[in-house]
Structures are given as structure tokens and as C-alpha cells.
Image (cartoon, rainbow, N blue to C red; front, side):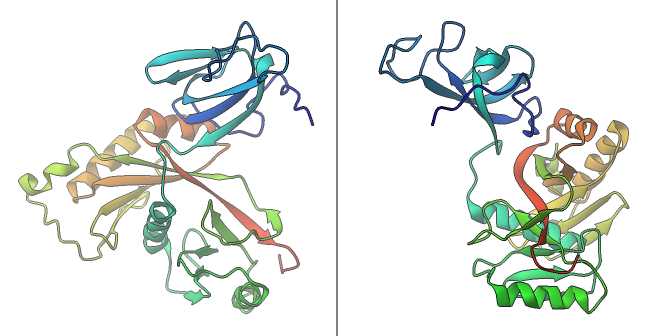
Length: 284
């Protein structure tokens, strides 16, 4: 089957921001970049007709521009057949799982239970079940037990699905927009000893309303920040670094353009994506 070029907006359904790493698939042609293989451009009869570029998004206009290895590549919108959003750097599943564990620790309230490798939460800022253990199950019995947990409390069944962390797909309906998890290194965080900050790796919690600092199992101190304006975001980053936090994360709806631009301007980049799902056949 031949794939036709995308509509006039190749980013439709792809929440990519300036500075995000993406793969752009496109039709070879006189106005498009040459193929990375030693192939004539435009393509000869019988030769490859498409190529791709992986780089950091510079401009969403027409042409779409990417920075790849210090070179700006320009691709006409009419030639683009697909765009795929990537993490800022290649990640192992263990790195996604580790950050999800940090966020679950920072946000979970007292009403929680482990079911088949899922941390099932009834309170806190994200009352949903998230798969955190490597041996996590997504079989009917496990999902039924999760449903029972929420039904007993009169709550809807909601799963938080980080990319790549489930052994099998769960059927259901998306609940809300995709979530972007962004991270950054905090400026000056490596100098905690000179500021008299005790780098004690024991779990700690410092809550500032729209920011919380906690310690991961490996001793890394993280700050979760949900500030909504630039001045507050900058202040919370300084506050967190002063408590010994080395890295910060933020969970943002992918369709919140203002927040996405704000955090990326402050040095946050995409770590991974997640989504909420109402499982098929379960209570809503």
C-alpha cells in the first residue's frame, strides 16, 4: 500500500514542540533533503522513494526545519508522510520505570495497594493505577482486581500507562490528553555540599504546594514542579536545588501549548510519554 503525503498540517495529532527530537518521514524530491543512503534525489524508477530525518525541531512552519548533527534540514510540508515524537535522548525501559517510581512516591496518598505489579492509588494528585514492577501483569484477573479496588471506593477505574512499560496492550478508551513527562538538570545542584545541604539519600519530602522534593531509590534527589508561570517556575527550581535536588520533572498535558513552551524554555526536555486509560468493559 502506498502512503500518501500528510495533510497541510503534518503535526496533526503529534504534539511536538520546538526543541523536541522527532523523526520525519518524507517523499524524496528536488526540494527535500537527499536520502541518507547513496541514492539519487529525486529517486530513480525502482529506487527508494522515501527517506527520514531524525533531529531536533527548529521550526514547525513550511518548510519544517530540523537540526541534525549541527546542520539544519528543511522539508516541505507537502513531502512529509509522517512525524514521530521521540524522547530527547534514547532511554532504557528501566529509566522510564525509575522516574515513574519517583513520581508515584512523591504524589501517592495513604490509600494505595500493590496489585500484580501495579501501584493502585485512590488519592493524591493522580488517583490511578500505574505499572511499576518489571513483573507487572495485565491479564484479566489483575485488571479485575484493580477494578474491585476502585469500585469498593466508588471511584472510576483509571490506568496510567507510561510508554513501553506494559508486556501487553490493554484495550480501553483514552481518558484525557497524552501526558508529557519532562526533565532537566537543576543549575548548581552539583554544589550542594558548599551550600551546607546534607545530601542524605534517605527518602525525604519537602512540599512547596506546586513543587515537591523527594529522593529516589538510587539516592538521586528529584523535584516535581507544577508552576504555571515563568517567575514561579524559576523560583521553584532554585528552591529545589537549595534542598539538594539534582534533577526536576514536570507532568504536562501534551495539548497545553503554553506550559509546554514555558518548561522547554527553562531547559526541560521530553523524557517519556504517558496516558490515562479507562479499560474496556470496566466501570467508568
